[in-house]
Image 1: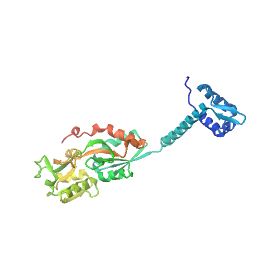
Image 2: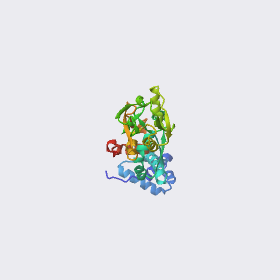
Image 3: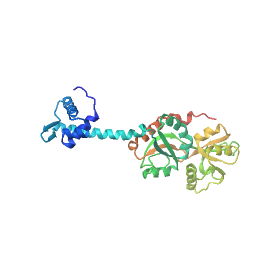
Image 4: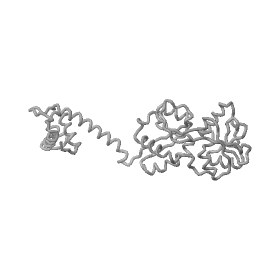
Length: 309
C-alpha cells in the first residue's frame, strides 16, 4: 500500500458525515463544497481499496470497514486535541511550574550546583523549592499534597518509590584547638556536654539533630543560632562552640575557615539523599524530565571528588 499523508481535516470530515448521516450535511458542517467532500472521501476509499460508506437515497451508512475507520479516526482526533492541550503552554510562551520539596542540605549544598543548568536549558520551567524535614516531606507526598521530594534515607518511606541521588553524611566540626580536635570519629552522645552553634529553629536539619538528641534523653545547649552553614563555620572557627553540618558543606567551608571535621558514628548521620514520589511513572511529564536530569547529574555530586582543604 502506498503511504498517504494523514490529513486531520479528512478525518473530521468523515466523522461529520457519520454524525449527520449525510454527505451534504457533513460537507456543510466542515465548511466545504459537496464536490470537495465527495472527492476527499473517494481518495480515502481509493487509498484503503475498500468502500467506507454505502450510499442511499436517504443518506449514507457505514460499511464494516467504515465503522473501523470511524473508531480509529475518533481516537486520532482525540489524541490530536490532547497533544494541542499539552503543547499549548509552550506555544503560548507560558511556563511550567514545578514544586520540589527538599531538606535543608539538599537546598543549600546540592541543588544550587545543578538547577542553573536545568533552568537555562529549559527557560519555560519555574521551580519552587519548599524546605522541610524529611519526615514532613514523606507525609506530604503520601497524602498527595506534593509530587516530588528530596529526602534523607534515614526516615521510613516504604510507601513511596525512591531513587538514589547522593550520599549526604553529617559531620561534627569544632575549633582547631578544641579538645575534640584529635578525634576522627565520634558518637553524638559524646558531644552533648559541649556548647553548640546551630541553625535557626525552623531549619529542618536542626530539627532532625534535636530529634536524635531527644532519643538519647539529651538536650542540646546552644550558644548561638545562625541562619546558614557559612555563618556557623565562621563562628566555630573562632572558638564559639561545636556544630553539626553536612560533610559537603564542611568541605566547602573548610577552605575558608580553619576548623576540624569529625565523622559522626550512627546510621542517622550516614545519610543518603533520595528522590521520592508516589509513582515516578505517573508523574507529570515535566516532573519526569526533571527527575531524569537530576539522576543524570549524580557524578557531579561525589564527595571524594570535592577539593579537600
